[in-house]
Length: 326
Image (cartoon, rainbow, N blue to C red):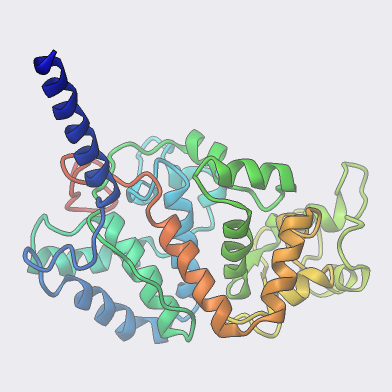
């Protein structure tokens, strides 16, 4: 009996230890001993180059989002497949930008600390640093992610919320990643900066139900302006449009104001007003300060950055971010 108790106690302590290890997978300053200047190298590279291409801030945070929603935050979105079936080949990622930017940061880090810093951590750090540099919120980025080697376009298509999502689809896809409705509203706030191609929302203007009609949930005056000045046809896949007109370079609350005015660009933006919980969250954010929004956004970003991370002996450190087996 004492033997059984001893075994049970040992097993319990082992499991507690395992849970503790799992919860502590990522940590601040993970590279303090192995590559002490890693985070400064990323930050310096971003600050030295983002002023020449400030739109990259929105592109990088989108890349981070798309990476984490497929197989977790493991850098798999960066892998380039010669057969055209990697994540970056999927429709949601065809307009993702910044691959060369991340690869350039990786090259600098490889020169300083070969085989130490993961591509997944570079995405997480660079997206945060770019947003901060352009005046947006700051958030903690614990590091220690390792890279994946699998990248499938079908998984990207199945897991990344498309701009045509209704509320049910958004709720399901976010819940699949451990994110709740508050996270959905806060992370959607990233649409306060950046641009989109007409192809991501032109169905709302020209063929919403397949009958050549317009989405009634979209403000008619705004729709008319888009049709006459921006997206001149359903097939326009080159023209870009501000997601937060007049404020696309400023990380602020205007995106939420536009959503309530039925001027959110995407169907997924409009969907946030169709549920009482998400609508209440929008109204709550708008009654608060920008600083409060920044603080809440930061928490959701850190939460997203922990999705299904590979740490310890899981995953690898890819030497070239675009090559699975590098």
